[in-house]
Image (tube, rainbow, N blue to C red; front, side, top):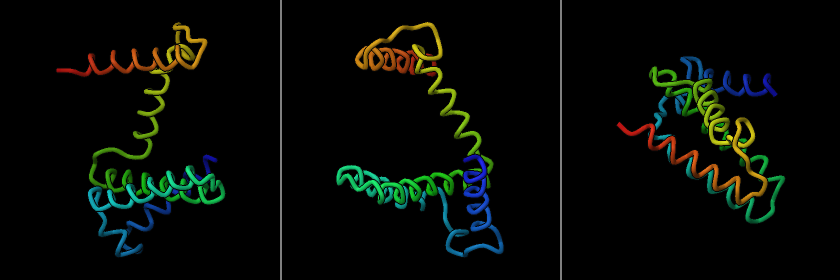
Length: 128
């Protein structure tokens, strides 16, 4: 899986390079918004329709949109795909305190309540 993900990132870099695709090179974070919205909608439709073979393709399309936005952000010195993955990893560990910490949650309802409590704590700690 690591090799496949690395290859996907390399494809995005190549498409954005001087020897890549003029259309892809012209894209900005803002111009890629339409693509991410469209692909998200197609993922939603595949799930609603129970079309799991199409879902696989649509998830790939959505993933590539995320990779492309991260590539453009990297070129602008904002963040890169590693930063995106590191941030979500940290967030998932923080918010699942009953799995990775000392809190307790035995039911889906208790887990959701603890998730919301942890999320609220983060919001308070991020306020200026």
